[in-house]
Amino acid sequence: MALQIANPAVVEKVERLARATGLNKTAVVDKALDLLANAALEPSDRVAQLNALIAQMDRVPDRVDAYDPLHWDQHGLPE
Image 1 (tube, rainbow, N blue to C red):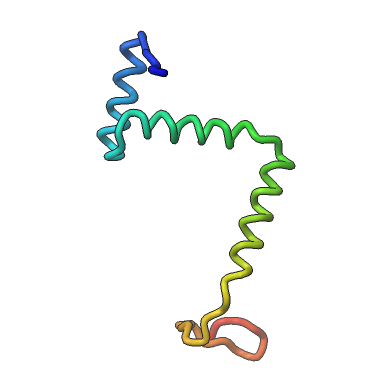
Image 2: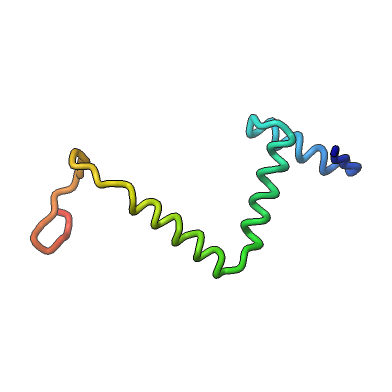
């Protein structure tokens, strides 16, 4: 089903955002709607999403070859 936007100012905004992002107009509108939907979430839903993201990040194993450029003293402060 096609969506027709009759407001020329809105059409110009969509076209300008599409040019700026390199996305097509459909993708721009889709992303904008996703952002609005996420902004409309209840705080408890946002907390649940953040907790799910943190849990997913916690499943990523630590790398033994990770490099820490800072040297730390016995108090846990950078030297």
